[in-house]
Length: 169
Image 1 (cartoon, rainbow, N blue to C red):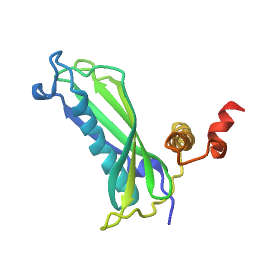
Image 2: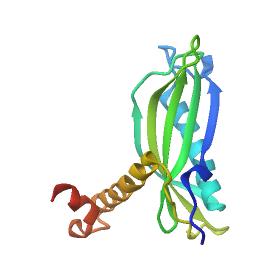
Image 3: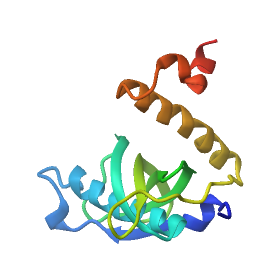
Image 4: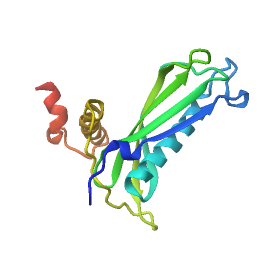
């Protein structure tokens, strides 16, 4: 299977925050943002694997900045690392200033998707070859996140989590 670059899975969704999508403070509902991120991550995972993909987990979400009514929101998602059948998708959320047009990073998230066949069984996916410094940082950190998740779930012995141990030795 030919490895791919993260840029090949890049998915960008841009939309406007409408009144029906906001809370009493006139900011985008967190759940609405989660749905947008899930859709973008799903497309990125599908582009990478060219298979049916399912959300396995939402590993991290940071709601760092409120997104007000009327904002233009851009969700950028791309595969940061691929394992056997799973893919980590890193998502950046940008808000465009209405007057200047400048974009500011508002939030980020990390999702995990699994590629499956028509019967729902996991299938192998291509590996990732990072091209930029940021892609390399996210690629390296993905293995640490995966090991931590496996250790916490009791699926990996902490002594076998070599990437995590390297942080402390």
